[in-house]
Length: 333
Image 1 (spheres, helix red, strand yellow):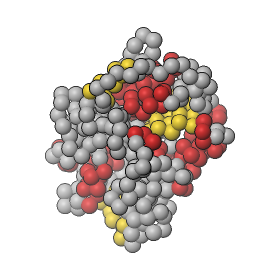
Image 2 (tube, one colour):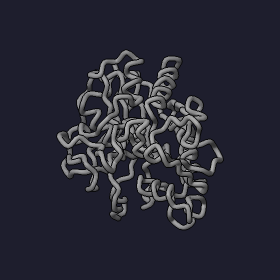
Image 3 (cartoon, rainbow, N blue to C red):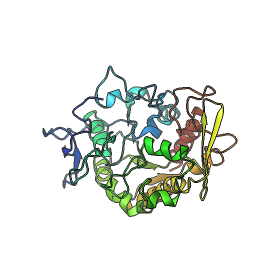
């Protein structure tokens, strides 16, 4: 993905701030750009990672970017992804939606730490970049009704740590039956320390963008979107189906499950701290995790689903449940 926004260089983003000036975010490109002029806004604005975008790509055989586009316009979105379904439920035309969701997006974790340390294999857009691009496309204004944020899984915890739950580490943990991915993996530096994921830490990392949206889209409901239930609280197994034939079970995946569930708790607490909404997707997706008899998740090259679907991401049935849950929440609040 090539663009002046593409992470890979770490310098300062232009000011993304309210009138008092609350944000200077890390990003790429060294030239300062003017803050966007006031706009009427778009009814629905989506800022998120692959759980929002949910493109038809498996990372290995099929790319998650459109090679004919640049910047955020290159980020693919699945036709059944929950933002697409949500906009239909809201009666919002596609032209009135700014969907800035992208695979590998994070809150603020880029390929270079704040101390200048390069982290190989890490990339993707940050929340500040997603929001600034949206602002430059007239997303935020008095017409804006809903702004969703679904991020955090791709971040390093604590901030600036060089270890994050990227796709390679997830895959390694799943197939490593010898060492597993329980608390020993955390102690040995093979999996992030999930205890570092707290509501206060999460709130601190998204606060500047939330403040910006509150200022420029004063009528909008800001919805912090949780993640679907991938495994019940306290579970120790992580499952994967390969080619629709092999059912793989990692029995020592306690740290992976704890990471997932800890993020949910942090999001809920952060929403309370920031005075915004939190939408819990777990009740609507409970009993349909990776190891369930009827999982609402895609797997590796599964012919029963789209063979190019992102592993461990919601199936179309899962996205339908997510969209309905989000729509039900915003319609009743």
